[in-house]
Length: 399
Image 1 (tube, one colour):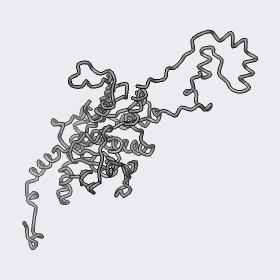
Image 2 (image 1 turned 30 degrees about the vertical axis):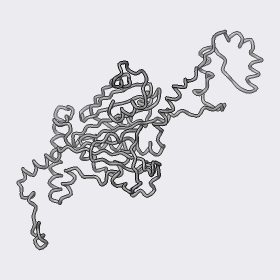
Image 3 (image 1 turned 180 degrees about the horizontal axis):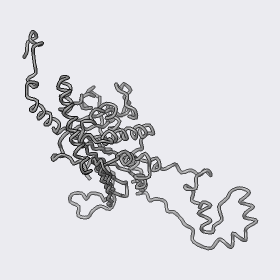
Image 4 (image 1 turned 180 degrees about the vertical axis):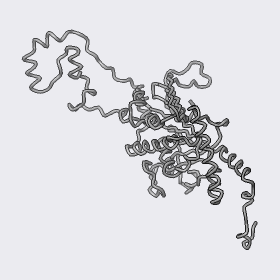
């Protein structure tokens, strides 16, 4: 310990080391393995959800029933939707439940020691980025990851709430991250089933009777209403009789009770997000991708994502929705190697994406597979139908 009288004469032994040794220490710190998981959990008292109206920092798009949740390690259980994380404040220990204060990674902690170390480490990182950029531009090849894929900072972020928390509370982590993993689900507004009504103003797509163009293609008279319909029946009764042939009428069987129960369970576990959350999360995801994949890559970064589209017949939402996470990823990665795996199931569509830097070009590879449920231990015959557990296991990374 240095006495108070000698505090002005104290010096750092670290700064007495030769510059080459300090740079070697910097290199070890930059490759140190460190993981942070960012998500959000429901605030509860005695098991009941409450609204956190005393939030210290405003997080746009995050509902008041949720609070930021951070773990200084990899914790994929925070990605679960069937068993969402909760923050119980019955005993007033909300700080411990949310993970407490975030521990800075080694490079960020070293940057805050003193101005001299900050300038020296910043210059060292700038030089490494310049070397990596020069190597990637020599042959236009893909920027490869280090030998140890676990080196550096790894961020595990849930979508959409974890992305919102990352942008509002910890935006500085993106500049230090070597690997970013995003996991969450997305529901397109087109996939939300509207209420069935008997209104005559329903669109042609919602009617069981054919539209005019579709009816004319089968020489079927166009359905009309009112007095014009009665006049047409009287004036053209002979034409209608000649054009209408005896053929069985198409009837649509209603969904079975099992299908209705399965669809209801899926919509209950995976409810749609509010329009405000969808809008802010989409814009935040765009900014995140542009930060990780700038025009001139400054560091080696790998982005991986698991996006779930719950519900039947949601395959079109993966590509057709302009606000889909995949659409934002493909639009904002200008140069890179993108590998996609699409899993199509009866309860949803799963998408696995991995993207790496490739400054001189863009290569996209896609594979499709049938999404089959996992066979339980001890069962010989595989299951034919998926369940909500299979969808949740996909988000957690177990499928």
